[in-house]
Image (cartoon, rainbow, N blue to C red):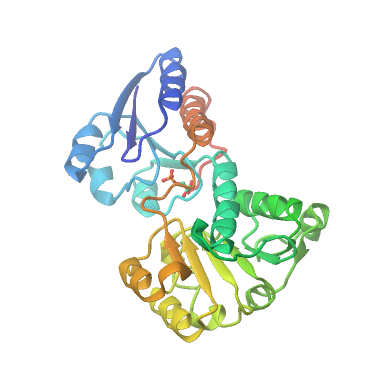
Length: 307
Ligand code: 3PG
């Protein structure tokens, strides 16, 4: 069996060492394709592999076609919108993610981003404190839940909206107030932290109308996906409401325009860095390797997302 780690944004060395240990101890071969700059490199590298570990790397129909032996793809991370699930399913390829493994890193970044914006992007001038403000968690998964926990520890009143969680106890136990509509969440919260995946239903769902409900001086924090933002709507509301702010870990397609028009009211990291910690790399990378071995040896498909 040959396992390929294909990461345009490479894992920390410790994570790669750990992946190698797990793969080689199982009697498999490990191949590495890191920091590749051209799709052709990925197409060539997958030609003889049985398993693939990726991050945000795109596994398109073209990649699948170039990998005739491929049996499993593990996205070392949460969101798998970068994988062509339909094609993989049609070819009988199992796709998994590693839920929760990099969540803490993303949650810490979301809190850091709130403070960064509250303090004028760490430039001189009077800022504000996040203590005592309201925080809205849009989707209460692994990351959202941690952001809520850290927010509460810092004295924010935390609300959440997640239509997929029907058990109210989950929110109650966390001391988080669950709301019944997304509109209510946006109306109540000084900070909204986005944790929705990019799906056909959520793409462009964060639009002008929804953002217009945010209170005076509110900030939208995006550590999720750029695709969930209706960028024209975002630009329109920022124009209309000079009090609103937007910070993102995934630059908008129109980011240069946003930066130019709105200055310090907007900020985008230069490259997505939410999961860029050694800890997150180790957790997600090793989980991916373990899941592959467990799949081949024991048929375990617990984390399969294309069942
Ligand atoms: C995820 O979905 O796990 C995060 O967005 C992290 O993505 P990355 O592995 O590309 O940093």
